Length: 66
Image (cartoon, rainbow, N blue to C red; front, side, top):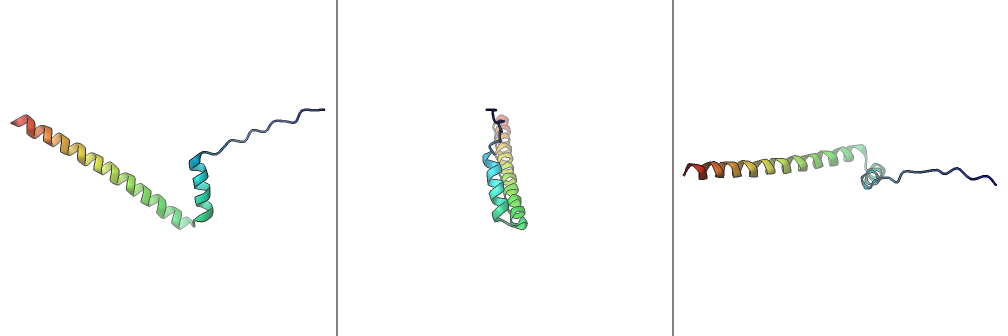
């Protein structure tokens, strides 16, 4: 009896699985809108982080002058 060849199939990552479900359920316009919304969220978070850092630097500058 001859051994059967072994086939390895990569298990998709969680994000790959979500992207596949998204592709099945949403039209391309909705996908684009969701991606744009997420990009906006990430940009808002970055700006908030930058604002907090700027406030901290300004507070240190004011404290150093006194």
